[in-house]
Image (cartoon, rainbow, N blue to C red):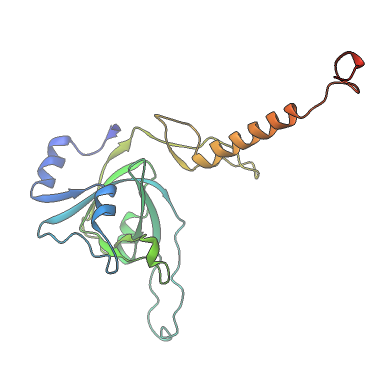
Length: 206
């Protein structure tokens, strides 16, 4: 559902003709270890997702064999969601230069992303990522997601939490809902264990 459309529906339909579209749950069912390769199909792959957060621009860690070599540019990690599942998209090289300004809340279509396996030692998590390296026209901005919101809870440092939520159902993230429930439960327990007066009701013990 869109609150604002950037690409007309007819243009998007024409652009996607002959391509295979995937939502995040489709990828989670399709991309498996140990290789974590993308879908084994001949058509172009298009992945849809909502940008729900993004990192600050990051610098690559220097490697042992990088002395004297040209340093790679910055990169960024964006989190994509379908309002239930989440997947990371890494922007490297010229893809970073072109797309790093995309804002959370934007629904995007990604053409033929690469697939990056989980970090070494974490293959059992099955948490692969998408990557883009090129500034070719590999991301379409479709519009703004109507149902994406951000948690309104205030953290201890006084800043808003900002974690994404499906605002059709809640204004608060799971973490802060659980914290509120724990606090309510603790308060109830405290009330239930209180004694009224020194000797019970009317000064007499039961």
